[in-house]
Length: 582
Image 1 (tube, one colour):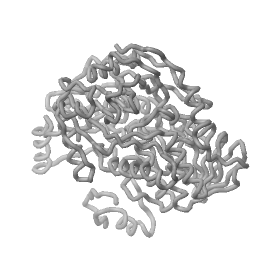
Image 2 (cartoon, helix red, strand yellow):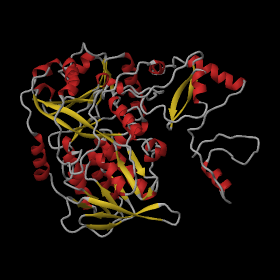
Image 3 (cartoon, helix red, strand yellow):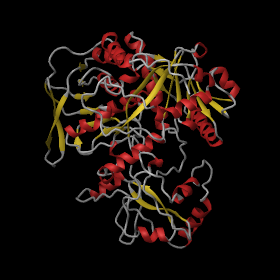
Image 4 (cartoon, one colour):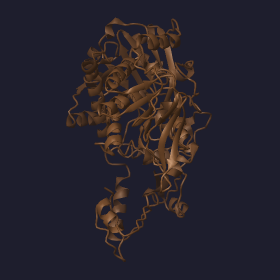
C-alpha cells in the first residue's frame, strides 16, 4: 500500500485560490429586471451555457448562489485538473468531445487569457482480450471521424509513460489529442468572453423560486426567477445546478429529476520527474484513471461500493468529505500494480467531493416536458468538463432555434417515462449501476440489472413459464428471446453485494446475459434465428406495451400523421402498420 506522508487541508487553499486568484467577472450592481435567458448554477456547465448564448446575441444572466465553481466544479479546480478524452463508443459523444476541445483550445486566442488546456494525450490500457476488441472498435470509429489514435504494444506504451509495468497489460490505445483542463481557468476565460458579449454574472445570489403561469391549454410556462436580490422576468431558465439540479427543478414545480449524488475521490501523489509531459491513463479493466499534472499523478477510479448521498446540502460550498480508504484502497492497489513505483511515492493530499450520476449514464439536456421554458443542462456523470462545452453549443441552438444540430435523444431529459421517474428506488438503483459500470465494456446488446421487474403485462408470468428471457424497454419487461424448458426470472437488484445487500442466490439471469456480452454473434444467435424464421413462416404476437402511444384527432390528424411518420397511415380497417417517427 502507498505510504501517506501527509494529508494537507486543501479546502481552504482551493477556496483562497478561487476567490483571490481567479479573475471575477461578477456584476456588482442590482440584478437586472428582465433577461431572455436566466442560467442557474455557476459551474462549468453554467459558464459554458452563458458563453454560447451571448455569442449568439442572447441577453443572458448567470446566477450563482455562492462563488463561481464553488459546487462540484471546484474540487477539480486550482491545481486540480480534469480529463478531456477524444474517443467514446458513441458518435454523438465523439462529436461533443471534438466541439469541447475546439472551445477550450480557442479560448486563449479569443480572450487573451490562458484557459488551462494542456494537450498531453491519453493512453487506454487493456488487460483482457475483450477490452482489446473494444479499443480496436474505438480506433476504427476514430478513423471514421477524424480522431487520430495509435495501437501500441506494452513496451511502446511504457516509452510514453515510464512508470508502467509492461508485463501487466496486453496493449494500449494512444490518443494524442486528449488532455486536461483546469476548471477554474476555463470558467474564468468563459466568463470573460461572455461578459464582453454583454452577459451578466451575479455571485452570492441564491434563487428562491421560479415563477410560472398556466397558458390557455393548461400547461406551465416560466415567467420569472425570484432571487434574494430581486425578481428577473424571463421566459427561459436553464438548470445548470449539477448535484443541486433536482432542487432547482422543484422550484418550477417539477417533482423529480433523475440525479443521484455520490462521493467520488482521487489522491494527489508526490512528484515524479520522469512523468512530466506523459499522457493520462485510463485502465478500464480495473476502473482506474491516472491524471498527470506536472510531475504529479492524480489517482482515482470508480469502485463497486461507492458512498451514495441522499442529497447534497443546499449551503455546501468549497467542501470535501473525508476519504474512506476502505473504499478507495482498491484503486491504489490497482495503480501500484500497473505502476510499481507508485508504491514508493507519498500522497500529498486527498480529494473527495460530490458527483452526480443518472440512471442511464447520460446527461440531462433539453426542455422539461412539464414546464415550457425550463431547460436542463446537468447530470454529467463525472464528465462535465469533457462534455459541457460541446453540449452548451447544442443547448444554445436548442433555445434559440428550437432544435440542436445533432440528434440529442440519448441526452434529452424527456427520454424517461413518468412511471420510471415516479419510482425513487428505480432512480437510485440505476444511478448506482451507472457509477459502478462507468468503465465497463460497452457491448452492442448490454442489458441492465438495476431497476428491473417493475412493469409487467398480463401475460408476463405465462411467458416466463414458457422460457422467455426478459429485457427492459422504457421500464417494461418484455421477451427478448426464448430458452425452451427454462424458467429464468429477473431478480431484484442486489447492488453487487454492497450497500448491506447480499448477492442474489439465483444468478441464472445474469449468466444468460453474459452470452450477449460480446462484439460477435450472441451465444443465443441460433435460438433467435429460429424464432425469426418461425415469425416469417408461421405467425407471432409481439409485446409492444413499452411503445409510446399518441392519439391523433381533429380535421388535420391525417395531415399531421403524413408529416410526422415515415409511412402512409391512410386508414385501412384490416391492417396494422408499424412506422418510425421522424
